[in-house]
Image (cartoon, rainbow, N blue to C red):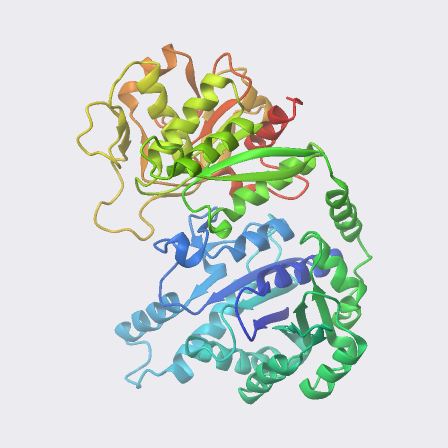
Amino acid sequence: MKYVVVSGGVLSGLGKGVTASSIGVLLKSAGLRVTSLKIDPYLNSDAGTMSPFEHGEVFVLDDGGEVDLDLGNYERFLDINLGRNNNLTTGKIYSKVLEAERRGDYLGKTVQVIPHITDAVQDWLEEVAHLPADGSDQSPDACIIELGGTVGDIESAPYIEALRQFQFRVGRENVTFVHVSLVPVMGPVGEQKTKPTQHTVKELRGLGITPDILVCRSTAPLTVETRQKLAAFCHVSPEAVMSTHDVPNIYHVPLMLHEQGLCNILDVDCESTDLLEQWRVMAFHLDTLDKEVHIAMVGKYTDLSDAYLSVIKSLQHAAMAVDHKLVIDWIEASHLENDWGDSDEYDAAWTMLKESAGVLVPGGFGDRGVEGKILAAQYARSSRTPYLGICLGLQVATIEFCRNVLGLEGANSTEFDENCKHPAVVFMPEISKTHLGGTMRLGSRPTIWQVDECTIRTLYGGGEEVHERHRHRYEVNPDLIESIESAGLVFVGKDETGQRCEIFELNDHPYYIGVQYHPEFKSRPGRPSPPFLGLLKAATGQL
């Protein structure tokens, strides 16, 4: 087993996840089986209870794990399916050690960060690295380990020490340390400054880890002088100083690293498969798209695109498939509401909605902006504008249909009004009301088709069922299904019991689809998610 450990310095948000994923692409292009693991030093057990404003999107895995959004990057880039244990948090590792202490596993010894926590971290890394991730039963050849945060964080200290020890446990020749840093450009002449990277590498080396490769983020390619200076002060060869400057799209990053000789440093033949050529075609194809398609994204976290990262990627995958350049028109859902205080923002939101070629309402929690989402669903239905509702997007469209087609005045979800007269969406009976973490309906579940022919089933390629990932606590009220369907909104997909509604499709509409699950988590470059592909096809007149 070979390990690539990716750490970061200077500041967060430099793209460690994309760097780690891109290195994985290069290893995979060399014919290796690759897996990935993310270390998050926070005390939460997982990302499930964290606000999108705090942490961005919560990515959901097949086994129901609620994890860091970087695992979404790994899955999309490497086309693998990871599990909850591929995301290691401080909460998980301390819980494991404390459980062992309570069982008496340490035979009365004083339990300490060193060696007990650091040993547990190493055991976790080695065990998870050998779990198959590509759908086969074969162990991976290489594991990419990303350490979250930046070097110098107090929370990261035990993991730095564990990784320092780990290189001797598995053999220094089997570990490559990659450090991602920032090279800012200063002054009127655009001088590239190396001092921040020098300091972060000095700190990392002081903790016992010497980087083999530096990946330097900058607005422009590193100059020869900058590379030589970094090599001299950071104890790496000039060839091992990689420039990851700004590019038109992220699919260029593996190509950029390959062109700078990373495959030679890793001692792998990245041309042994056609994977890298596929990436090259995809990256440059995306650059050449000039015919735009506007999709209105009606959400409540529109100031923070990371909250909808997988949705954005899924839209991009689908837009590439229909040869259009995606333009997302971000609409704050509350701005569509009649009682919004700023008339200019109200008018702008409605103008943007009406000028879009398609409408997407993503998932979310809480009642802020819900009435705006309901209005967006109503507009798309009545104007025959292509619509895709995901999770809450399905629920608000159902509420709108009950209010305005069935005439059920005041129809709502019990999430927003426990005492509403006509509950169109209700709390799922098996879900805990006292514990939040890991208590939703989570992970991959089957959806069984209820009709022989419909648009969304055709997009999925037929078959008897589909498997998609879920994350929700509320569902369409089973008592209203018959009335809703008799009025033309048909639940064409349900769960294995035949009771829980998973997919609806509106009769006599170009494309009006709602899904209770989250199809964005399984979309891949070159293999877009069917509901997203249908939306983009409808929006561009290709459906």
